Length: 229
Image: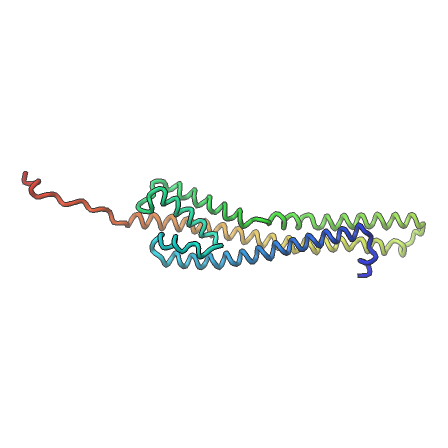
């Protein structure tokens, strides 16, 4: 606290900037962890409901209850495309269209989940350099004061250098949690992407199997009088 009290305006400004960056990074990490945990819980609930139900119409009627699960977006997109192609019955005439719909839904869901992640990456990369800038400016001020005073002793220059190095430590304190949080959140995003791809394939298989075993309309028996004629 004594070194902070004796720091110059440049160091104080740098420390305030780093404090703001730290608050932003922690806010992004906490909000993302909360939203990812909620999405993960809803994913598990939605998968249980989907695998227990035997009809897509039943899942479509209750899918909104499981938001913010990204699997709901994949299901809705595939289900809507299936309805457009065949009215929700029979084999879809264009299975590639269902696959493209699943990929589009997965991409849109991931884009939504990645919001504000760039702020976290930027803070992780820029934080040390902001702290280093404060250190360099502090050392310049210390040596400038040393030259003005004309006392070339370690006692004269050491306090200014030690105060300047505070900004480097502060930059590392800001950057290290941001790097760790970004890596962990990126890993979870890859897990969500894999789950959405797996669910998309599972849903397409369910549609194909249901269409394959749907009863076909039986042809009327031949008229015996027609055969006699």
